[in-house]
Image (tube, rainbow, N blue to C red):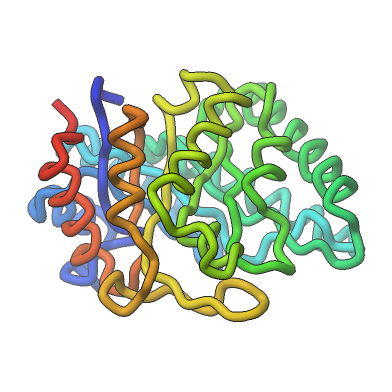
Length: 283
């Protein structure tokens, strides 16, 4: 990661490169003037291990910073042991292939509370995360493993819970989705000071260095009584994403910003433009 760095890109292959494959997708990210991309394993780990080194090569050549998102069907809090075992395997396999592709981070959704308390759920997810990271390190797979802050009230993943899960665990860090936290708060967290308090909390708990290795998701979003409903383009949402960028600048945050708006690269380019306007671009 370069010094003074905020790398920006889409969640998945850009829409303008749809159907042309991942290698072309990475090149299009660069052509667009963006410099990051998250490989989305939505329904399964579709990238083969033997094809991953080619992705790493193109990413290195273009300077595009890669991450991977584990399949959405992960629930580490299920009462069904089989579901938990399969969820762990999905995370491990995503990390392994991601590492071969040169990805810096693996993002995953931890699961649903069910009838568990926040405290119990945190203990379960933290225990599994420790095991996952330990297994990956033993295999020589060095990749940041990042549980994500979630937008639905039935989903495990408040800011405090995710920080509790990763604190003190080697190669574990937060995947910070500001839009999810806005939706989870049902619109209450939507001002510059709110976003700065989020960063203050992470710095206080995980240290100043944590803000130098952030992985952030941004998008427009719609919410209801139970939190997140769906992602939207910035123009269709009341989410104050511009103040998120201001907060990141004020706290000298470095890392990757992945845009999850439906328009993908269009909103990613808006993020990049705003970073440049505010003088928070990477050198």
